[in-house]
Length: 124
Image (cartoon, rainbow, N blue to C red; front, side, top):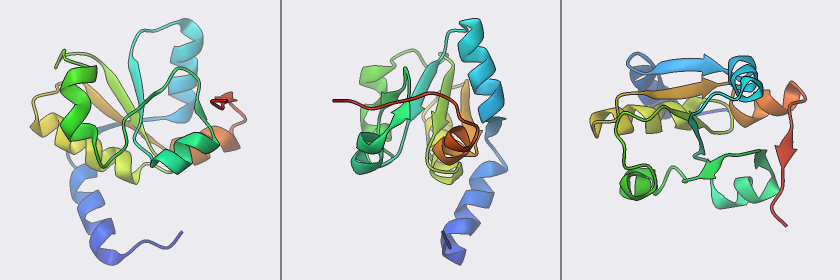
């Protein structure tokens, strides 16, 4: 996907501030049984096509509005993912501005997860 220059500029700005992880690290942590919130920030139609097992869906358009009701602890570990790692970086930046202290963006996103062959679930 070709992204607009303005969008890429705000993503670069956000990525300068947010912590990032990768799909392999997240999968390894899942397998170890580590406790963290995994939040899918993609659009509803993307979520419906498949998502990472155990993820919560809070789309990029509503996460800032709804996060405090879903994850009220501002110190909870939250790993965000989207399609490739751009929207999740923007969302992570905003959650940090809201006082969430342990928010990480998963670089590679759902696309990288799929390419690695990691498990995906579909809601029926």
